[in-house]
Length: 393
Image (cartoon, rainbow, N blue to C red; front, side, top):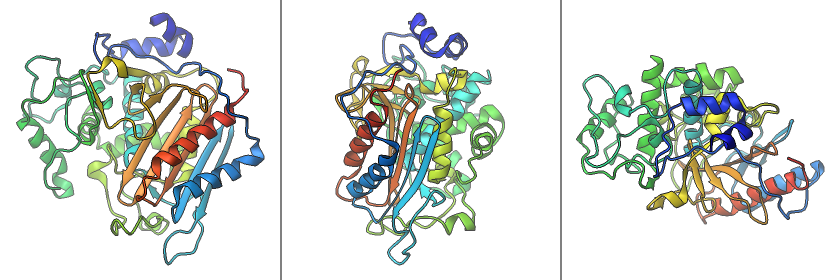
């Protein structure tokens, strides 16, 4: 396994993955597999001139009022909007249109986690208890390992999807979720199954904030969004940014543009296609894979090592779990990919990357009805295959 990592991400990145505290146990978090050479696909290539047409096809498949799309193909970046901003706003969305990322926010939590691990500020196998608020005790499973940062980031902590508590005031959110956690007993032992968990990522965000001595927002800005120049990726948009927010699916509710700091680590970030293009370009940069990226894009949990997996297959059959990333194996239409879905508050979102051929696609649209996300995700995956068809690796 070590030889594989050395070949795929370089010796420095592999050393950091090992130093990060990955536990090679015989259950879920047993091995970290880094970005791998994808298998050739049978999809015909698409020319650069056809990218806009393909993006428009994604919009048509969404059946949404509006959509923004970002495509990264090597060093080429394109961000574009389709449709209209809202029922009473005929403007066409564009690269600066604000959207809700929903659960794609988890990729930013994982990016921050990987960065801090690469900097030696924490380890993937750190128990959550090591970063708990003073006086709070994380319940210890009777017959299993403790909850770790890695099990939180891979949905294998045994925690449920939500805490099941009434939403507290924003300034009480952290205390409320930790008060809930310390009362939890009888949860499945970490590492045996994958249960998609928003509350797990919110606790992970608290742990990352604790490790840096900053708020989560400040830690993310310092380590990730700030250095990349992501000017609109935030949980607390300004009035000017809110004026650029694409309307949500109003059939689901009004969803005003508000401060979503309490859930920033799990689903509270806003962003734009321009910002997401910058972030994907960093994830797909040419040259040697750096330590943080090697940690971030590795796969730590194999699907077939789990007793069960719940909530992972929204875009396609998951074969593995990384730090929030979901791995899909190659098929006749696309190579091995990493993807993540998001949905809620009137938006559906999807991101997919082929780290080997340096291709990435991000979409956000405002139609939560008709189960359109799996269709859009399928078409985006096919486009990844077409863009990379015939390209050497």
